[in-house]
Amino acid sequence: MATGASAPPTRLQIMVRLRRAEGQLRGVQRMLDEDSSCDDVLVQLAAVTAALDQVGLHLIGERLRGCTQADGEICADELERSVATLMRHARIGR
Image (cartoon, rainbow, N blue to C red; front, side, top):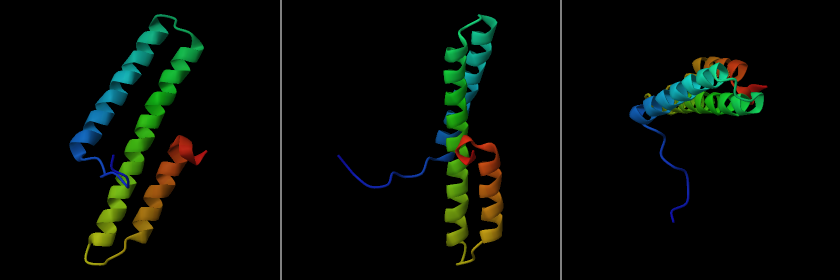
């Protein structure tokens, strides 16, 4: 078994994550139509939120890698704005 950091997800893997979250959200709508329990709906909403937060974190990581690899140019201001935006909207920032 290998240890260490795993490779960042590819664009295709990110799209798969977004489609999965979209499916989960449609499932939440169905659950509401079927009068599912509040707890069950909230669990699914938390799963959708976590999936979207992970996509946001990946995008920030990708931007950071791009900034540090772009001829040594650091784009700290842009990265800080991205992090602030994610933190405002992501569950991890609350």
